Image (cartoon, rainbow, N blue to C red; front, side):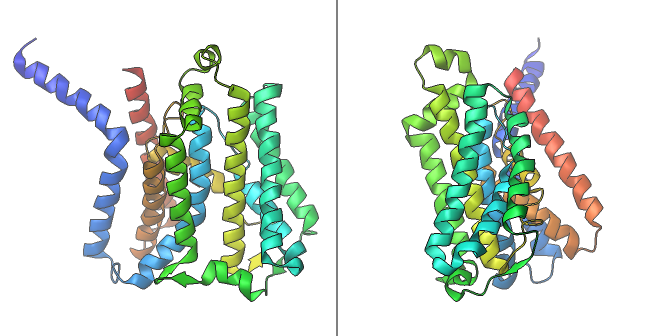
Length: 320
């Protein structure tokens, strides 16, 4: 092998190694620069605020999804968990916003516990267990809400979705705090190391004494509780609860954000900051298409291409 060939081969290997990690940031930077040049009023705070508020539920749900995928699992029930939270809020808001929010989170905790139990103890594949809960969870939400659209008029509760601190919406602060908490959990705790060990090699984790079942149940509970928080935020932001629409297909957006952000579907790694960047990228891509009068179908095709590139890059890195 000549020196030139060796350098070329080394360069390709380095590129394949860096793409899954930094590709999302490069793509996000390019898209931002494009909007700065070609999209009117892009840098106005009113526009940036709208983008951040709209992406907040996806970011929060994607954080939980990243943990699940880190264990080589998947959680398709997150949209239904959001719907369940939306159905619970108006039922108990008369007892105060705090009580309604706590009960909504408890509802998510129960679904997460069931998901985790089906995966960890019954031995169902995550896609099967959470697919069943996707259907059942939204069905329960529709029963609780009687299939009706509910207006929310509690000013204190609405303040969660519309209020600001230092000019930044509360919802954005909540997402930022949760992202920091999940990042700390993954990188700085024993639980995080166990989670990654399970995703990397579950049989080896069992032999090493990792409490696999307990960790899996906890991961699915965290994912569901985060989805409940996203549901609460969504209801507070729009001032209404519609169990038939809230959270619809958000599981796909969350999975996309996680994969594009560099977390491999094969587990063993969780890229929290990449997940946030992935959610921002997909949100900004859609907004860019709309701002430049392109069809929504075009945005969907571009998103599909980005997903394929991200999955292929992760696969290349995993199989080297």
